[in-house]
View 1: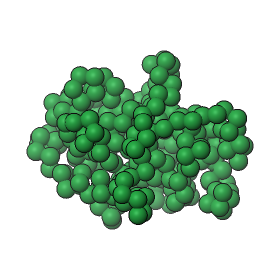
View 2: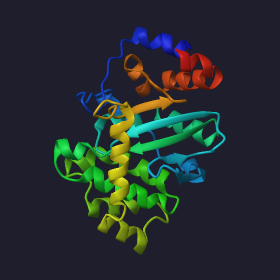
View 3: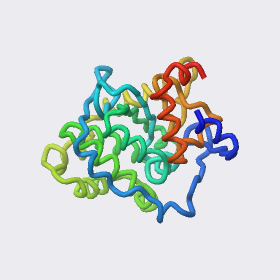
View 4: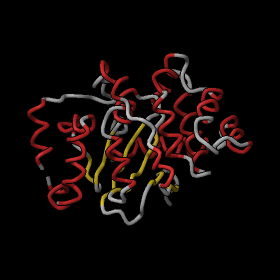
Length: 247
């Protein structure tokens, strides 16, 4: 609970991708503070949920459930993944304290042009087929800024980045990336994102984090980018779930 109290004092007013404008959280220090590749994620179980759109990472029996809404082209998601609280989320998932669920959106294509988000989501789904989603997901976000500045996620770029994940490249994976094999998954995932706000016509913005079915509210959005505070928030949800759901 201390983490929640502290964020108000920091005055962290940040926004994500969606109807809100992108924000730069730690742009000046991102290069020196980037989270290194997390080798232990190779041990994480990963699967597609029964709904056909949710990618679940970690122990099914983990006491805390965290859902993350992400678009591969969203720069604010990149900050969350590279210099923000995502490293804490990975550590707690490896420790079986959390299971992480991903809903992958692709709305940025409509706003920026091109089809890079759709191609990246398709490729991530193909990586899931061989148990390489977590590692490939890290690689894509670690390279997002450079990729976006040079034309976005293309078929050739996605295949080149796949070379960084041991055992990912194969004829079947390459064909899935080239032919958009999982295009129906891409569309269904975007629909799941769009419907996440209930009657609202648009999705919740990216990144959005939902802990034990309660969305981190807008006034606490800055917690996602402060590792210690985000860890405190996850700990409070784990240690006092009824308080978190009611707060």
